[in-house]
Image (cartoon, rainbow, N blue to C red):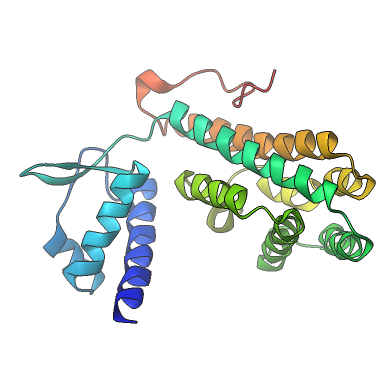
Length: 235
């Protein structure tokens, strides 16, 4: 149980460090040292070490022998590639859901979608919760745990997580509110190829909006900036 608690603490510390990197509080090339971080975050060194090792595995920091951990630049093409993998996994999950569609599940998806459409404030936490519940329901219909694992792994690597930043990125809240109806139509009709494509497109739209916004903020390494069109290259 103690090890489990330390693992959860490590995940929480990793999330805090990610936010510091994304906010610019910690900059590319900065050293991340165990003791100062532990003191600043008011935790022991162990969860900080676990957090930095996780961030190194996920590509946010690099571990240099005898020098500790340093923040690495966030490359635009890496974000696009990560979104491509995420969109591909989510598209396949939607296709699997279409192949296993049942009336009870569709009724539930329709109810969530209708509630999203009725909301006066589509930037609210309730809107975000409905979005999460809807995607979770599609994942449950798909019953494909390995695909879901890959989707979750990709989601963890994307900067500016949807659930913490959908207020900030222009267009994200609108996709959250209106972007599911056509996908549900395809799932209900058992159209796996159609569900796959539309769910991929759903995530591609999210990616394009994020990348365009980060381009406008000069977020990337200068040499990594490219034209924002069709970020996922779904030609």
